[in-house]
Amino acid sequence: MKRIFAILMLLALALSSCRSEPADSAARTQAVEWSQECANMTLNIPEGWSWKAVDEEHRIGVALIPPEAAGNPSQTVGIYCYPDGIGLCGTVYRTDELTLANGMETFGYFDKYDDSVSYTVVLPGTAGTYVLMMSTTEEFYDANIDTILAILGGGTYGEGFMTEAEAIARAEEMRTDMNGAINTTRAVFDISTGMWTVKFWSTYNAALGEEFVIDGRSEE
Image 1 (spheres, rainbow, N blue to C red):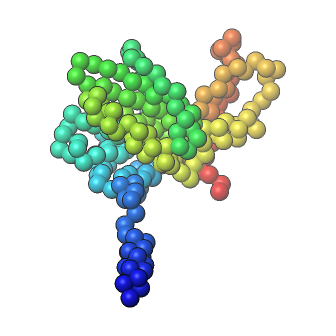
Image 2: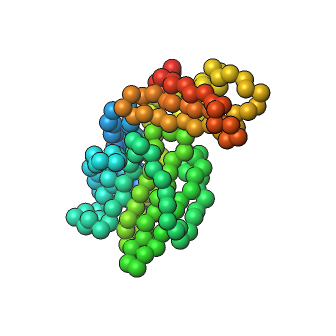
């Protein structure tokens, strides 16, 4: 009888463990969907994090708020779209080669100051200039950078619009063969109209060049 009772107890424990909460509950995420004009992004952030939309003079997008940063304006993390593009300047303490979870290859620019650090990652080839920007303490950076890069690499950006490579390929179909004189290409996406402007020109002869304006909406 005791043996039967012991077997029943073991079965009960096994069934109980099957119904228990998963051990990686901390990895659960919540979806963030943001859009403004022709800019958009979707992100998955950990449970317990919050976010808010940002609409500033030179940038729009999403501010991410981990629990320990709530109410602390000195800890800022955001993924922004810069309608007029962005230029990086000044000295950089360290440059990281990154391959994000979505396969994007880019760079992380780390700067260190007296009591704070900054980290900037520009996403390449998207319809719009999307940038991760952090300004935090070094302790906060060390504790959260892996999670933040996972969020960045797990997101989508400029969905429904051609990538830079697709826009250039479309313009290539329309350009004139100038006997190899063209050696420079630049493509800029306008988030207010959804149009790509692709320019081909020669660094040897400023008079040579062609410019095409292409509807950036994806045909898919």
